[in-house]
Image 1 (spheres, helix red, strand yellow):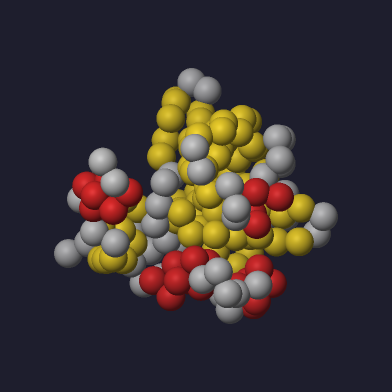
Image 2 (tube, rainbow, N blue to C red):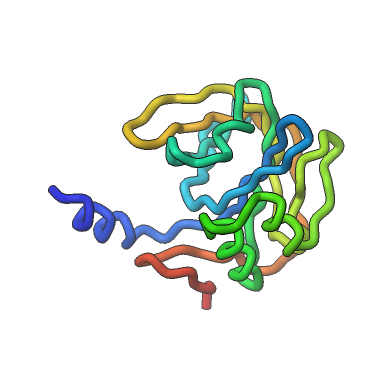
Length: 158
Protein backbone atom coordinates (compact mmCIF):
# COMPACT_ATOMS: atom_id res chain seq x y z
CA UNK A 1 0.00 0.00 0.00
CA UNK A 2 1.28 3.53 -0.70
CA UNK A 3 1.39 6.42 1.79
CA UNK A 4 -1.44 8.41 0.19
CA UNK A 5 -3.86 5.47 0.32
CA UNK A 6 -2.89 4.79 3.92
CA UNK A 7 -3.46 8.47 4.87
CA UNK A 8 -6.88 8.48 3.14
CA UNK A 9 -7.94 5.34 5.00
CA UNK A 10 -6.78 6.65 8.38
CA UNK A 11 -8.36 10.04 7.65
CA UNK A 12 -11.79 8.43 7.98
CA UNK A 13 -11.17 8.12 11.71
CA UNK A 14 -12.16 11.29 13.59
CA UNK A 15 -9.60 12.52 16.12
CA UNK A 16 -9.46 15.37 18.58
CA UNK A 17 -7.01 18.23 18.15
CA UNK A 18 -4.49 19.12 20.83
CA UNK A 19 -1.56 21.45 21.30
CA UNK A 20 1.19 19.85 23.33
CA UNK A 21 3.41 22.28 25.23
CA UNK A 22 6.72 21.69 26.98
CA UNK A 23 9.68 23.70 28.21
CA UNK A 24 13.42 23.17 28.33
CA UNK A 25 16.11 25.60 29.50
CA UNK A 26 13.49 28.36 29.81
CA UNK A 27 12.32 27.95 26.20
CA UNK A 28 8.65 27.13 25.51
CA UNK A 29 7.85 24.57 22.81
CA UNK A 30 4.48 23.64 21.35
CA UNK A 31 2.96 21.75 18.43
CA UNK A 32 -0.41 20.60 17.15
CA UNK A 33 -1.12 16.89 17.51
CA UNK A 34 -4.11 14.70 16.76
CA UNK A 35 -2.34 11.50 17.81
CA UNK A 36 -3.25 11.88 21.50
CA UNK A 37 -5.02 9.05 23.34
CA UNK A 38 -5.50 7.69 26.84
CA UNK A 39 -3.65 4.42 27.52
CA UNK A 40 -4.14 3.25 31.10
CA UNK A 41 -6.08 4.02 34.28
CA UNK A 42 -3.65 2.19 36.56
CA UNK A 43 -1.28 3.94 36.35
CA UNK A 44 -2.74 6.98 34.57
CA UNK A 45 -0.98 7.07 31.18
CA UNK A 46 -1.50 8.84 27.85
CA UNK A 47 0.41 8.82 24.58
CA UNK A 48 1.02 10.97 21.53
CA UNK A 49 3.22 10.68 18.46
CA UNK A 50 5.68 13.24 17.09
CA UNK A 51 7.72 13.25 13.87
CA UNK A 52 11.40 12.64 14.51
CA UNK A 53 12.36 15.90 12.77
CA UNK A 54 10.17 18.06 15.02
CA UNK A 55 11.99 20.67 17.11
CA UNK A 56 9.84 19.85 20.15
CA UNK A 57 11.65 16.52 20.55
CA UNK A 58 14.43 18.55 22.18
CA UNK A 59 12.13 19.47 25.11
CA UNK A 60 10.64 16.01 25.57
CA UNK A 61 13.45 14.21 27.35
CA UNK A 62 12.64 11.53 29.94
CA UNK A 63 11.10 12.91 33.15
CA UNK A 64 10.57 16.33 31.57
CA UNK A 65 7.01 17.65 31.80
CA UNK A 66 4.49 18.49 29.09
CA UNK A 67 0.86 19.57 28.86
CA UNK A 68 -1.73 18.29 26.41
CA UNK A 69 -4.18 21.15 25.70
CA UNK A 70 -7.43 19.79 24.24
CA UNK A 71 -8.60 22.54 21.88
CA UNK A 72 -12.18 23.79 21.66
CA UNK A 73 -14.08 24.23 18.43
CA UNK A 74 -13.42 27.99 18.73
CA UNK A 75 -9.63 27.48 18.56
CA UNK A 76 -8.96 26.47 14.95
CA UNK A 77 -6.64 29.50 14.62
CA UNK A 78 -4.50 28.16 17.48
CA UNK A 79 -4.39 24.76 15.78
CA UNK A 80 -2.96 26.40 12.66
CA UNK A 81 -0.50 28.58 14.60
CA UNK A 82 1.07 25.54 16.26
CA UNK A 83 1.16 23.48 13.07
CA UNK A 84 2.84 26.20 10.96
CA UNK A 85 6.47 25.12 10.42
CA UNK A 86 7.41 28.69 9.44
CA UNK A 87 6.58 30.13 12.87
CA UNK A 88 9.24 30.26 15.56
CA UNK A 89 8.23 28.77 18.94
CA UNK A 90 8.49 32.18 20.63
CA UNK A 91 6.25 33.76 17.98
CA UNK A 92 3.63 31.05 18.42
CA UNK A 93 3.24 31.77 22.12
CA UNK A 94 3.06 35.55 21.53
CA UNK A 95 -0.07 34.96 19.42
CA UNK A 96 -2.15 33.20 22.11
CA UNK A 97 -3.41 33.71 25.66
CA UNK A 98 -2.09 31.25 28.20
CA UNK A 99 -1.32 30.65 31.84
CA UNK A 100 1.24 28.31 33.35
CA UNK A 101 0.96 25.16 35.41
CA UNK A 102 2.71 25.02 38.78
CA UNK A 103 5.60 23.44 36.83
CA UNK A 104 5.82 26.37 34.39
CA UNK A 105 4.30 24.66 31.34
CA UNK A 106 1.88 26.66 29.14
CA UNK A 107 -1.85 26.02 29.50
CA UNK A 108 -3.74 27.49 26.53
CA UNK A 109 -6.62 29.66 27.72
CA UNK A 110 -10.15 28.58 26.79
CA UNK A 111 -9.15 25.05 25.82
CA UNK A 112 -11.65 22.35 26.72
CA UNK A 113 -9.23 20.72 29.16
CA UNK A 114 -5.56 20.06 29.86
CA UNK A 115 -3.49 17.18 31.20
CA UNK A 116 0.04 17.57 32.60
CA UNK A 117 2.41 14.63 32.38
CA UNK A 118 5.97 13.46 32.93
CA UNK A 119 7.64 11.90 29.90
CA UNK A 120 7.64 8.27 31.02
CA UNK A 121 8.94 6.59 27.87
CA UNK A 122 9.99 7.44 24.31
CA UNK A 123 9.50 4.67 21.77
CA UNK A 124 11.11 4.63 18.32
CA UNK A 125 8.39 3.99 15.71
CA UNK A 126 9.32 4.49 12.04
CA UNK A 127 9.52 8.20 11.23
CA UNK A 128 7.89 9.14 14.57
CA UNK A 129 8.49 8.78 18.28
CA UNK A 130 5.70 7.58 20.54
CA UNK A 131 5.76 9.45 23.83
CA UNK A 132 4.17 7.78 26.84
CA UNK A 133 3.24 10.25 29.56
CA UNK A 134 2.47 9.62 33.22
CA UNK A 135 -0.39 11.93 34.23
CA UNK A 136 0.35 14.19 37.21
CA UNK A 137 -2.36 16.88 36.95
CA UNK A 138 -5.19 18.17 34.79
CA UNK A 139 -8.44 20.05 34.65
CA UNK A 140 -11.55 20.56 32.55
CA UNK A 141 -11.67 24.27 31.71
CA UNK A 142 -14.86 24.73 29.68
CA UNK A 143 -17.98 22.97 28.46
CA UNK A 144 -17.30 23.93 24.84
CA UNK A 145 -17.15 21.23 22.18
CA UNK A 146 -13.73 19.96 21.13
CA UNK A 147 -12.09 20.71 17.79
CA UNK A 148 -11.85 17.61 15.59
CA UNK A 149 -9.81 16.45 12.60
CA UNK A 150 -11.43 14.36 9.86
CA UNK A 151 -10.43 13.67 6.23
CA UNK A 152 -7.52 16.14 6.44
CA UNK A 153 -9.72 18.99 7.66
CA UNK A 154 -10.29 20.75 10.97
CA UNK A 155 -14.00 20.57 11.84
CA UNK A 156 -16.56 21.33 14.53
CA UNK A 157 -18.94 18.79 16.01
CA UNK A 158 -22.47 19.62 14.85
